[in-house]
Length: 506
Image (cartoon, rainbow, N blue to C red; front, top):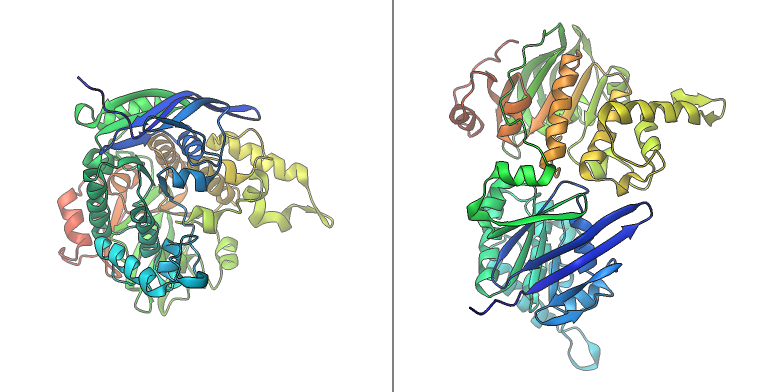
């Protein structure tokens, strides 16, 4: 039987950074017309392996083959010319340029004397956009597009080349359900054309929906390849983290204390209306709903990022006005934002400075910040949250997603808040780190914190929340006790089909 020649193959790749062997003899291949998942915890080596493939890093040992040719990817442009196309999770677009200029950047079609052939450029681009069924055209300024549509522009780039292999890195992180369907159709078309697809995602349902094989890395080492049809989520998880996960519902029975936060008739223009709920000390209150339901906007209003148009906010039974994040922090409200990289961290600063940033003024000794006090705070929460970093001097941008999220959580815990709000606390985080953060959330409630968790993942809210608020179109439809809610009733409520009922008391 003739063996199929891989579209792309990496043999024995080794990559070492100071003090860390990021890749240790890793081999990986993707066949023509195959969708091959690359999985592993944050820090397992996936990103490093892809950067070696993309010419950003040079391997210390090993070889790369495209078809039957051994190649050296000295630069990202060289990788592109060899037919290796990347669809990055982090957007790399020029927002002031048009969609067409972004898609063909560096390869604009030319007429005589080097002039850009705009008609050909726009026609080619519109043909590609037609395949993606998007609602914008080639002339649209990228900065005027939503994040989800900007992601579709990134994906469109892959369709402009004679690709041998296309790497999708968390491609659905910013997409709606309808846009995901279009993306999966595009992947199916590429597969039918014999293109090899490398699919990197933490979303198990996507992995089992569209991939043919799964390769797992752990601690920079190859842990095995399995046919997707021959395995299941539990087996893949154990390959990734070396242990089984607790996937049960929240059945905690710790004592709940007094009401820490109460909201009455809170509205913010058209974003949300007449919202009322309470959260007690020792309780996790989950907010679940579709994108645009108003969940994040409620959190931002509680944190002083938005001014309410009506309603009351009460802390410990006393009405308060929160006009800014400084007001919220002073009153004991902290927010771990949905976008940890853009809103929760300064990636170019070290771990210690990120963690102590909100309280720099309180840590001053004269005109200078007391470094010893800052280090003591960092050490305390590094140990408490099991943050994996060589030391406080490590730049936050070099940490894995799970450890970055723990830095953000540690930053706010060090402020000793009464109410801790976590918006999509495990987005973009591997299953191992996700399990650790779920455990941490439950432990914080057991320690007496009032915790609000906003999530788009049903298993997450079922796993961590004591009560679940279901939202639809800016309104609370139902509030469920976690041990009584069913998946059907929760889906009905967030789809606007459930009957409006008052919030179930704690």
